[in-house]
Image (tube, rainbow, N blue to C red):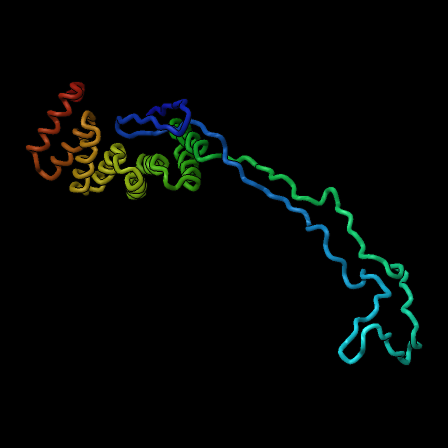
Length: 252
């Protein structure tokens, strides 16, 4: 199997239906991860100990306005409160100078690999026969793009060629749910069913694939084999004849 790359303006796919298929995306810009750094709030209100001294008490209902406080045992009458060392008497509310660096910093971004990059890495590994590495990259792509039909399809393909047929069926099914006209996914899922000897399911998938890709001789051959397994030889011969008419090399 040879993967084919495209250079197009947006996400694109190229499919080659010969046995199995690998689909390749065009490259996209990486997705940024925002890291926002915020400063502490400025211009906070002063605390109680920052308030100015020598503030007279406000009048109460029992005491008329402008009546000075009565002397206490500790303090003689009519003695004004002395200013504290920290603040002079009758000082106005202190102003807080704004720190020029106390502001919200701009958003910084850290690039990370996109689903497209993981996907194309997976295709490279797949093309070189490095199936575990290909599977890992497709899984990473799937985490970023869980509803992409091609990511699901190619992950199923790696399971398929490693003999994990049920896992392959699960991924092909996910791809078909997202993209209902995915002929290659129907074809490959049909073959996985065939290996599991689920011939009725295989015939149904091959028939769907033929409806979507009527000129694919390989699918006619596969359905012919499935019909032969259930002893429907008339339909099997019809499919073999159709495959030969599309590609005479099938006679070899």
